[in-house]
Length: 418
Image (cartoon, rainbow, N blue to C red; front, side, top):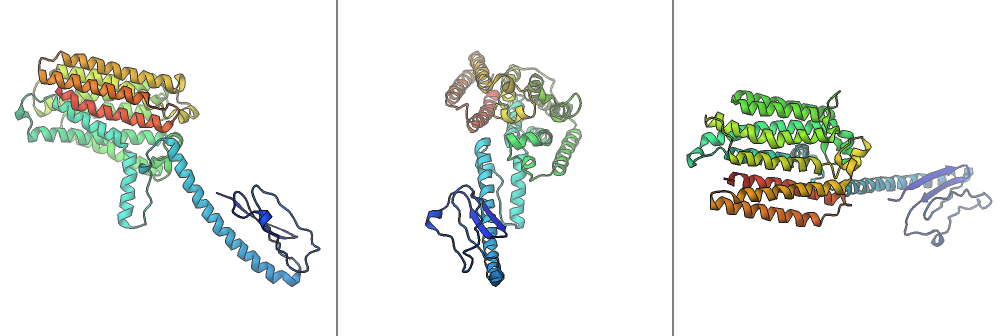
């Protein structure tokens, strides 16, 4: 937006409007009051066109001068306020356009009513909870729990209760982990993810601390009263690794080290989720001895590939902020393109192994579904990857969210491995 400058001097008052304007100086002559022709005009130059209004300073015209001065200042304030509104609106749009985050996830402004205040609060919490991780956690627990089902009668209210207990406790811990990461990364997120509540200023640091503290306590409380040791240890190890990954204390904040950061994510997403939640259903809900089955081994191995890919890929669109704040991710060290194609290659390799595992199944229905399903997913991934513009942060972020969708899809196939 154009800037408006209001200047004054002993020779009179001048109003300048800089920038693009529909009025041009060649179309508009200076307005002079009588009896001031002998006074020397004070000229100020700014970019763009200029409108100059001279106000006499002799006593006989003080009243007129004051009147026009007040009118001009009133107009100037109105234009400045309008300019500020448009500047903020344009800046907000540009931040979203370059961040790669969907515009519909931007905080929405509603009239100040109780209902709209509640909608604003829910929208902020939705973004704070990082919903793609919430969906991934819920789907993974449900999928792995189904691996413990041996017969149709196992699908019972007891089974659904055990799954629900695990999902709720894990989601509480998930919100603690992603919330702590945002508390530790406020300045980085102002560059990489300005739409998050802490980075945007919607949440204060105190609000963030209260949320993560409350959810960690609720997670441990629920895990304790359920009485399942596999579930409790899954929550505890996730808490320790999630804290060490993010919190800025001596010997911690492991996200600064690319290999250690990837191992943290792999440990939680690939090992703890598969083994601990399977054992929760197998030993606590069904009261059966622990058995390490072929589907469980497959799920752990496949998700190890996927977890490494997520750990690497999440840093590709964040390269700008990571460089500024000294986060030595593989993307910062090796470059976006190299890390991108490494991730795609790892996933294609995982799909290839999955096709071979599915082909060895003694059950025809399992063989057909798993081979065909993984072949389709591998093809879709390759086609999508070839179309990504690696110079566009929006395109890379969109591809990252697409990989999460492939992550979700895999958990629909895992229970069908036999």
